[in-house]
Image (spheres, rainbow, N blue to C red):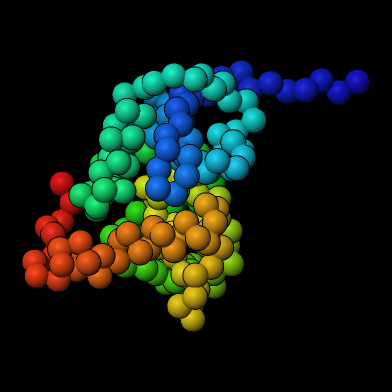
Length: 187
């Protein structure tokens, strides 16, 4: 008879939802930081099978909501949050590389693969990018195909285009009536 093995130390996550210009987002935080920012239809697989999820607020989730509102309002270009990634070492290296892509810029999967010292691992980088548990804040939307085309995105291609347009340098010109210089960098 097989006996299921239980994780002796399941992780506890706090969960809140927030409305945004790209739809309802589900935020999950642990005692260590933000663990996931999931789209409405995303699976909670990023959190692990032995997770305990508690509805309710947590300081990291309150701060995440505040910073996301600023981002969507166009007043924040960089996030300053503790992140609690759960994944393989390879995935974490890809996600760390994503964090280095500046606001308003894009990179290709090949560029990310080269950055982490694995230039032949373009497809694996794509797979890790697709499993990014902290979307938007770890900006997987800033990764595009080598030919410049928008490629897959967990939040959907329409939302990827919205996020990239929000971060576009032309957005500053439109918002200012093209008469003011670019806003200063993030807070």
